[in-house]
Figure (cartoon, helix red, strand yellow):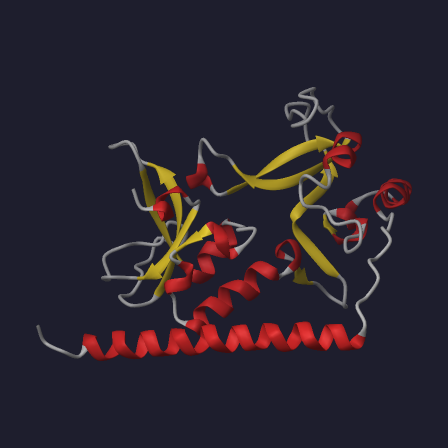
Length: 241
């Protein structure tokens, strides 16, 4: 079995124009970059790809790193860099008005009903109680995409590192929905979530320069290899067999 089949995502260039994007439902043009969420097949014992346009994919899925994407290193270098940059955007964050970032994967609000259950303690979250969500993919229904996994505030605080919360980078007011809270509740949440961890000692300028130089050498080597590979592939496409 291809080890890429065990990864949650797959990237490649469309082999034809027959596949439709699972988000916007429009066709994915031949040779364009497409990324799939791998889901369990209903027809055989294995996984099948649910293809998306590049932009549609990141509206639904949040890979933690490029190693979760099968065949990633077979892509053109520019597309590798494009995907890598998208993943590295902190928590899938985006700029709002001003310089503050908004964390798309975290949501805070007053519970709209008492039907939601905390994903840590498995107890009900009462209506109008503050709840915090981390958006995740349901392993049993991956085709649905990201869904809210609600927690009591206290339970979220205990699990926050496990859920990807970074005390050194994130603050309460970066959570989607924070602005809608009452002033008193904002202060309470901020008190618990705005605890900055001590930053690691920065490397000396000389060490940093050496690390940057080595990283650039490796990147250049990989970039050149990718360019040579795709030059051959593009030449072969023009040969009638």
